[in-house]
Image: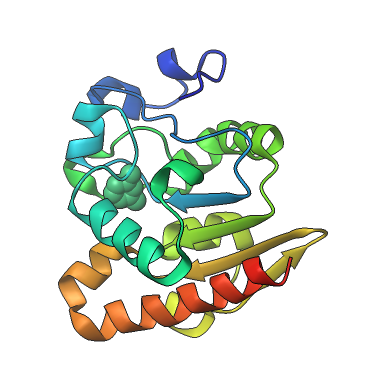
Length: 181
Ligand code: URA
C-alpha cells in the first residue's frame, strides 16, 4: 500500500466529513494492470482497502479464472477515494475534486492496461458518452496505454449469470491484450 502525500488526510470535499477511512489503493506500484472502480463501499470504508467486499471477491475470482492474475498483481483503486453516504453515486464535482489523486496514481504506477468497473469509472477515465452496455469490452487506446471498460461487479451480483458471462468475455479480451504484449 502506498501513501500518496496528503491523501490519507484529504479534506478537499465533503465526503471527508462522513468517511471513516480514505481508501487510497492497493497493490504494487510497478503493476502493469490497474483496476479502477467507482468509490469505496461500507466494507472498504471500514477496512481501508478497495474492493475487499462481496463485489471485489466476485471480480477477482473472474480475473483469476479468465486472465490468471491475482489481486496482488494489480494496482487497485477508485475514482473517488472516500465512501459517499449510503453508497450513492459520486457527483461530477466530487469526481473532479478527487481526479488529481487518480492522475497522481496513474503517473506513479504508469500501467500499460486499465480496466474500469462500471459507468462512473469508465466515463471518468475514458470520457465516453454512451452507456456501459455499448462500450464494455471495447479497447480504448491512449499512446501505449490501453483501457477496457467492463461492468461493475455489483451489477453482476444484481444481474446474475448473464452479466457475469459478459464480464468473463470482456476479461478474455484483456487476456488476449496481455498475451499480445
Ligand atoms: N465498489 C467500488 O466501486 N469500489 C470499491 O472499492 C468497492 C465497491
